[in-house]
Length: 94
Image (cartoon, rainbow, N blue to C red; front, side, top):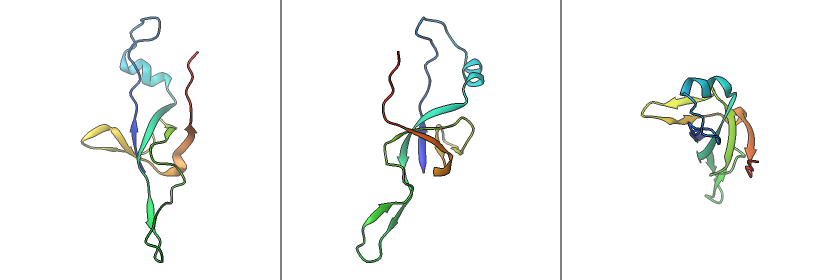
């Protein structure tokens, strides 16, 4: 599947600036949106079916170093569905 990694803000809620290196050293996983999924076509009905088990457009949590980065855009990665740690339905920040 192809996912787009969401960028973390460079400033905390209290206004503290975080350099890119500091942010990445703290993170173990990243939030991403599923942009494309693996699919197969049924021979009898010609209907296309999602075979990855992860819905298109879902927010997922992946390890920060998994997948293959797309050369022309660092925000996109090709990720195997087994590398998805969780599907995130709602994010509530307190």
